[in-house]
Image 1 (cartoon, helix red, strand yellow):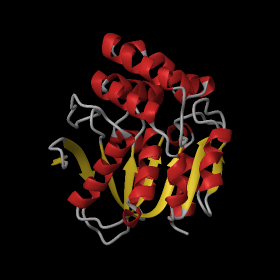
Image 2 (cartoon, one colour):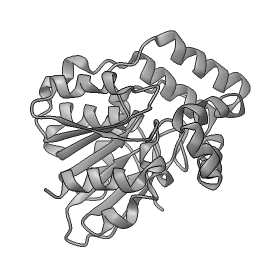
Image 3 (cartoon, rainbow, N blue to C red):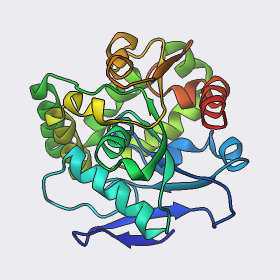
Image 4 (cartoon, helix red, strand yellow):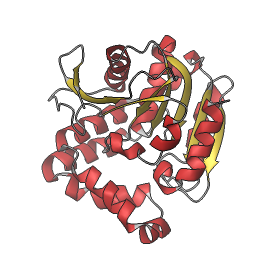
Length: 261
């Protein structure tokens, strides 16, 4: 997987399928995850699309700069990834923090986005001091102090009991996240407010949320639909935050039904 330099010389870990003539699709990731969070989607997506994935700055195999992160900065990273692999525009799918990044890209660099899918995210997630508290814990105590709470938010208890191998894989992914990268992205989410940008989004938009998502609750995710012209919403039943892992068949059906229409 190549390391591609951004405009501020930070290198991002990128995986892009070879140019196969299929439409391009960019995947953007959740806080505390890397590109492997999409493994359950890849076989279905690759039947129809050229898939492009990358690790955000401070995550996975990408550099961990000791500088402030913002959703704007992360969105410009996503744009630069498409530039680096020679893609002028793509369908963009993001989950949680990745959904916020995808929305920023669609609002601020609309020529890059064909269709937009925002999953398990909200345009504004206060209170800011909660995110600053998580950032402080990550820096002072590491991800081991946060991972149990993360897993509790990401999956229903029934799924944690029924699929321990999948949960263990995700847990290991969270623990492998550099503490500074996690903390800096917490601060980016804490100061994020995309509500005034939503009217700028012109791409056809689907919003996906888990029925039992305690963080980006269905009522909160409807803010996207209320402000983006023509946007529609799909609720994944029997799923919490990481609905693409907990209910991959239902998630993939909703995603492909929208993207291939």
